[in-house]
Length: 146
Image (cartoon, helix red, strand yellow):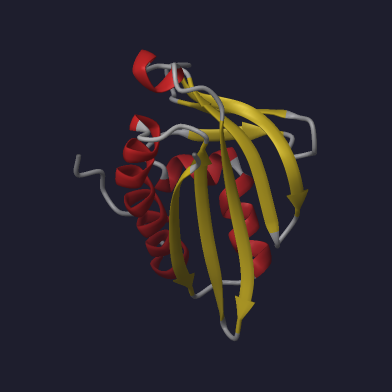
């Protein structure tokens, strides 16, 4: 059985700016609380989330990459044994223009139920995407609170 978490946000920005915010390591570490999302962002390329000290938190492969529209990656936790044990998840970022704003939908799913991994990302994505929204709309990311 697949377990899934979906988070939707509307952000006053353009498709190009949102894509850059999602795929630029310099940008991601501003709203992702110091973590860089690193990859060539081409189908088949590896990706990883990396702290400034070099610690890799998560990694996977780019499955689909349509700049300004859609990014799909496989996802495996690298630092918590109980999450890593659940195997590979899939995360999809869908970007849809909606007037002067973008609708960003993040869908994270795994074929494990119940899933500790989905519980973890369910707590993480709202803070990360809210920080991204704040950074794009005001120029300032949210501070980490947890």
